[in-house]
Structure formats: structure tokens, C-alpha cells
Amino acid sequence: QQQVKQSPQSLIVQKGGISIINCAYENTAFDYFPWYQQFPGKGPALLIAIRPDVSEKKEGRFTISFNKSAKQFSLHIMDSQPGDSATYFCAANFLTGTASKLTFGTGTRLQVTL
Amino acid sequence: KAGVTQTPRYLIKTRGQQVTLSCSPISGHRSVSWYQQTPGQGLQFLFEYFSETQRNKGNFPGRFSGRQFSNSRSEMNVSTLELGDSALYLCASSFGQGAGKLFFGSGTQLSVL
Image (cartoon, rainbow over all chains, first blue to last red):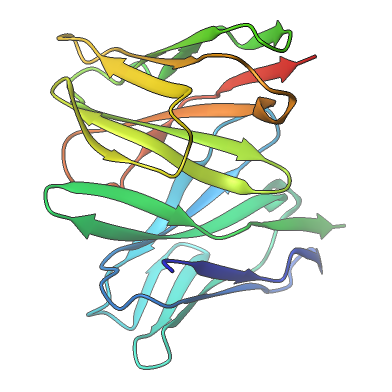
């Protein structure tokens, strides 16, 4: 089964704190791991992504940590802001021939309080 | 550059009816994917089209179908609607291969009564 398990389901963090969302995958054929951010009434937007040959990728306040041997990856949001309050989805890319599709985690609803 | 445009934004149908949703991808993008989003099941892949050909299909019944036109615009059709089809239907486009780099529209919220 090509699943991506995501935790926690919801997260409350104080402004300025660090938000951490974790994901685990099963299929070692996955070769691309993006994170998407979704605000109410909008579609998901690509936030940051990583390939399995890299252990960490940082873009501004957002960092992905990737552990290939454990088949786990996580999103860290440093200095969390109220504007970061959204639902975050991890995902994995699974290539089948010339086609490709995303398998999404179940989502984490992040609330950043003042 | 304009983003992915989905129409209509909201739709209310009754059981047994059929519905067609439309998606215009970002200019130059040749791949269009469709996803169903529900609170219980999350984001589920429906199908992907590239150059008018269906490249991949998710685990949905045959009532769900789609097509892509020569200008890359895509439509999704659901026939014989069921209450469980109520969901946000999201269209996403990408330049080519590499489904991770998807650009999503705001979706069509379908309610089946």
C-alpha cells in the first residue's frame, strides 16, 4: 500500500515557537517529497520540497528534514507566525512509467496563537 | 501569469444527476490532475491527463471520468451522483512530469443532496 502517514492531526503553537509536523512513508520508490499549505477556501500551494538524496532543505523559516533509512520526513516552521495558521499536507511522488501522481498525508491543522 | 482556474466555484446537485467540472491550467502547462478532497478521506487522486491522454487513474468508480482538450483545458464528469460524492474537487496543473510540482486551483465545492 502506497501510504503516507502524517502526524499530528492538529497543532497549536505560540507565536515565535517552532512547529513540527512529521510524515512517514512505506514505499521506497517514492522519489520526491513536497509539502503543501492550504488556507480555507483555497487549493493547496506548494511550500517546499525535497528529494531523497538530500537530508535537509531550508527555505526561509521552513525546513524539511529527511531520514531515508527511517523513511520519515518532517517540516519545521521556525518563528511561527499567526499567518502560518493553515492546514499542511506532506506528500510523496510515485512514478509509474511516464505517469506520476501524488500521495498525500492526511493533513495537519496548525494554529499559531498570539 | 494566471493561475489554475476552476469553474464553477460551487455546485449543488441531487442524487442521480450528473455534473461536469471545468479546469483551465496555467498557460504552458500540459499536465492536468484531479483530486477529491473530503474531511474524512483527505486528498485522493482521481486521474491525470497529459497531451489529451489519461496517464494515470486513481481508485474511483467508473462514474468518475475526465478528458483533456488540445488546449490542455480539462473537464471532469461524475455521473449518477451519490451523497458520498460531496467534496471539494481540485484541479492541478504542471508543466510536464514531476507531479510534486503541482499548482492547484481553488476547487469546485460539490454538494449532493
